[in-house]
Length: 500
RNA sequence: GCCCCAUUCGUCUAGAGGCCUAGGACGUAGCCCUCUCAAGGCUAAAACAGGGGUUCGAUUCCCCUAUGGGGCACCA
Image (cartoon, rainbow, N blue to C red):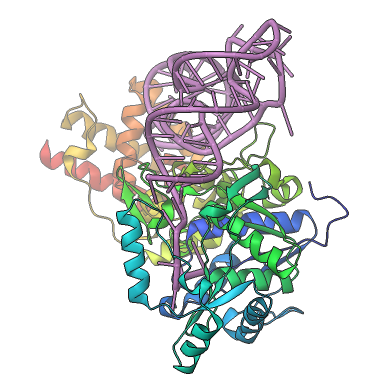
């Protein structure tokens, strides 16, 4: 989609250090990154910290961690540097001031001395008259004398942009085509605040220009600002980057956009994760999260939903992004994570399982882990699930199973005891403790006794593992070992005997 | 209040005027496989917001309405 005459592809992700890394931000970063990698361009990380009030310490680390975890590497940024630095806006203040002054000198902007109180009053009046809220351009029309007087008094001021009063502005959006705005609906927005810091609009335009950003891909909520930025570029006489507004993630309950939430929450009884760190902590694989995100608002084609990040890079096309916002389809993440877990090699999966087990306070025996790993691989959607499925393999203690749980429906204690004793006898006589030998022996018992596999194996499962759900029975007892398995079965027989 | 964007199964999506009796996926239900649970296979229910145009023909183009989202800060 990028024509070859265009400038080299340089895109940026420009978060504000105002807290945790939100999944919506991650998605925006991902689409920028995919675009950059697809076009062999540069992906730049820039920190927009021009609002000193909202700065939250530690945010920068969360941005690095979140992007890094997903493999969204940046070519230029605060930590890695680059030829267009600094990459932190608070270190570029002189630049913004210089260009704000340039706009004033060229009659494209003006100083405004209005107080917060007056602004608020004007706003109220306009609202009362059912007009659009906003500034009444009072200071735009100050005479030279009035201006000089205010300067002499040393009144604090902001710099405001002189928005064209009439006409219209048409912005070409790479996803939705031309979008037209009436200039009369646009405001004389503030470019430089009274504290000397730029607003987003100024800093963004100046930085994108001097960092030679070729394409801007940002969230949908910025679409209304596009004509403002267009006019700023026009005032400066700079070429505006190509621009696209990405659809946003909506809350699963259908109310508003997801980014209104600052952390994971429960909806319909399931946890809806929204922070990058939560995904990692919950055991989701980075490739699964990337895959999950790339299926929202964009589709691979060929009816494929499962694909690698590399494949996504090869195919990514910003023009094919769906313009409509989407409800966050979090229920697909578990499925995808399961798919990716099954795609992992044993060596890749092992550390995840080890960590999950250790986090649950279990001591991990390497031999046991290696044996249970392939059994668990098709049965878990997150590494943590191995604890519930097979954590008993890593526990020393084994609590005797209560009578009620042991006996299959329609069986009585006498029968159960008799069967268990036969099982113990036959299994202890076994030469070799492989799962197929055990199974062959038990199949023979089934044959002779006419019992149902479900009943017999079910009882043995509970007796040997203490659980009604486990990995396949004989693979499991093979891991548990002959002595311990028989001990547990005898114990079960005793439990039944007492009741009987 | 004004402005902008969007609207295909519950959800994510394919669909760029005839290929659509609208395809895929998740989820749901059923069946098969089966020692439990998964995985896997098969099947089912499930959508073009409504109304006008344009056209020989609209899911696809235009308009209106409705609904949803976003914006209108010395926040980004």
